[in-house]
Image (cartoon, rainbow, N blue to C red):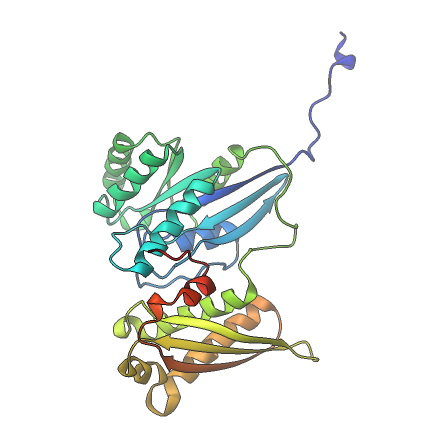
Length: 309
């Protein structure tokens, strides 16, 4: 066969697509990394641990590749039903993925939470990439030692030194992910950024603002539910939300003197919703006490979590 008669290479339009789970302990920077790789905000980010509760997907289209990132809740030792549901969601995200990226806080190093994630990867028989995050806070010698110690514990396909906050090393990580995607048709429309329903995303935005405003004053077991979403004739949307807390004292904290705190939270949430939804938002927030909401099946369903007995 002459050179001109050889089978031509596959066209550039041949596509690849796959799910990539971002796993790791709480506060390792998983949500920050997910938002960085997606290029827009799909997951809430706060300094408070265990703020990501369910699997959140962000979709990236690059050339022939469609990458569906799955930001999972942090893996930690569960104590309550909500904790168990969050950890189950994390491992379900890893089990369903074509590729796993384990994120480790390089400053914190190897602790019991990291060991638990490694153990889970081994038990699941998963292949994974390792991303050592927050490298700007750690000396090079410690990073190299940490990389070696992690690869002694698990046979990672590759190791990357990154800063999810600043972006360092993230392009190399993205290239490695693209090269490992399986061939196949795209899984979502080209213009879709996430599979998170807008109602749930609105709830998550408000929950983030609560944590950012109140810091350590409230436990993480606070729930925001979007009860009403009405499209208006002028193109705007009217959103009504309820913040559920467990005690009257927590309600007073969220409301603030004369309702000042919840007004600030609402203003912060509304501004971000308008940016993300690209439309005017009329946001109305109510605060209610429901002492046992963490044992209410309906709340788990609204958060996208499976009920854990």
